[in-house]
Length: 248
Ligand SMILES: NC(=O)c1ccc[n+]([C@@H]2O[C@H](COP(=O)([O-])OP(=O)(O)OC[C@H]3O[C@@H](n4cnc5c(N)ncnc54)[C@H](OP(=O)(O)O)[C@@H]3O)[C@@H](O)[C@H]2O)c1
Image (cartoon, rainbow, N blue to C red):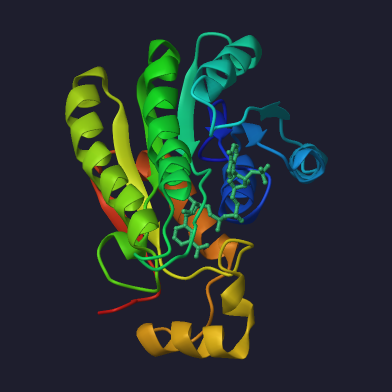
């Protein structure tokens, strides 16, 4: 029996990168996992197949979270599968649009806030009726929310907004026994941070970190599963740095 046996979980952006690692970690701990994707259907199905092969329960769900009604459509699908009880929401799906202040377009700025802030906000709103007493919401923040790294000012502002939502949601939902936290990774080697695969990207990452290797998605997935578990039952309203000691 895993520590999350009997729990139901939704991971947005579970098809790739950190979301995939979080979905696998939650499944390993015994949760039934709904693996959400936007475009990467095959990758999401592969995650579900891996979870099922290990003896777990898993399904794919899909919605474009850049669309205003994306969270509403996703919540409907979730209710269709788990019914009236969701225990864990990992709002992980996100985009980055690295650009200098001068080169940032209004369209990119709006899309960043739509996917990274509006979608998690309204997903929580839409899932509130089925978020059970004792449930846990985990958002994805970033090192970039509290340190100037790269040409990421618009993206970083979306993660600053997440840190703010964590506080407000934790305060509003605490009386219902719902905990709300975020993990803030540093540079993690995923499609989003492809530069970490280059030697200059690796050198940059190692230069700002206390721990001298490039983070992999698994390094974050376990921290997400921890925050979702009863071991974290007294942690709420917090953003947990999971960044190998970046920019100390
Ligand atoms: N990688 C890092 O260095 C790093 C550092 C700090 C924080 N983070 C945060 O961690 C989270 C995951 O990042 P990652 O590095 O794992 O990114 P990634 O590998 O690029 O994966 C992004 C995920 O988000 C989903 N997604 C993106 N746009 C979507 C949309 N419009 N509708 C639905 N789903 C959408 C993607 O789904 P599909 O592929 O199916 O469309 C994919 O599963 C993000 O919130 C990111 O900001 C990452």
